[in-house]
Length: 297
Length: 229
Image 1 (cartoon, rainbow over the protein chains, first blue to last red):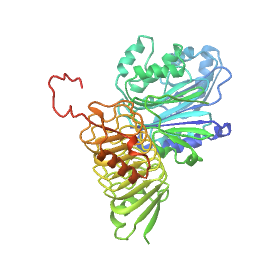
Image 2 (image 1 turned 135 degrees about the horizontal axis):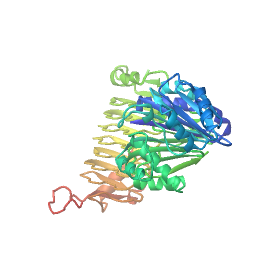
Image 3 (image 1 turned 90 degrees about the vertical axis):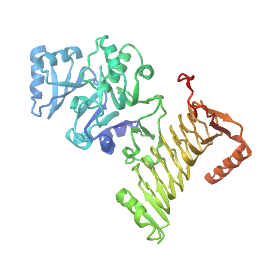
């Protein structure tokens, strides 16, 4: 079991309240996923450069020093704002160069996400604890994808928490289990795609992002995913300007959507939607199996 | 006093269920209203008293499961397994019902005004289900006894591996499951559909419905079938 939540605000005025609206949604899914939690938030894209959400096990990492060392080595300015074991680094360097530099000089760092619009946080602990640790309530943006994990395969570690990311401005959360992640993984590895964990969800995330990198639009990638990804799933996918929801052909895993003029909110169960403003007048429905639901921010 | 309100925003669900199980009858309570259900699981599970329970909002998993006596009305949507294993009584969902509505119900009547998701009436063992809207795929799977009346359409594999249960469908059937077949309606079928529609509060003409029942070819092992059912 796991819990997924998603929120896309249609009214720009609500962007400042995205995190505040989302935290009770995540806490509402605690019983479905008490061991880890994570959240990806998409906000207005950077005019130039990329930002990286970084994680390290140590709470006393010298984040400011990291930016200075990057400048000392590569002569490109970087700004790094850290809070405990998490930081956001912004630089004009190309993503390949940054990742390679981290690998050589700071292998203890995990790159949780990379892009122009995405910020990502994930860690072990109850949804309430993780939300407080990273102050989810203060996050602002146009849409967000959250997850509460009850591990049914692969260990309980921060890097196996969801959302998973691949490429840039792309993330996926999953409730369910895939039956062919190793087949997908072998296929993708021959394409030069590197995996960071043994988690089944990572295979789905990297598969869909690979399809998009090969030129498919999100909807086409998902359509191919229906053929290639085998198992039980409700997937919630975030890109720079889209939120997509799909369920497997047997709809083994739950999902509920509540839509108003102001927002579209998605959760595994209604419990996570009940507090939302004007939810009583929302259009509430259960997504159909193997049907694509895509909203644009 | 013959009625009571429970506001789940302030009262734990366990207090409501304890009251329904142990105190309602002794106190002569005939009607209980549940406010702010907000998707809570197991509301009015195992109700065994002649009490009318009105749930004012959306219920979570297994609402009114194992109902033995009484009548539960959900003025909203219902989550997974509403009226699962109901023994008798009546459950009425005014909105839609999620997967496995009325699963393995032995008796009683489940009415859903909206659509139901997949596997409605799976392994039905004797209860009656009337759906005002459409049902999802795999509905009536392995249903052993009881009746389903579907006023809208049915998804894929309707009535797969049916035993003695009968399904009546007014709309389109996307596909029939293994061993399910459409049969002629008899006078007793029209009467049964008419009675069930009346009990559910619908006014459709029973002549608009068709009957789906088991061809019974799965009742006996066929060594020559080579698993090609």
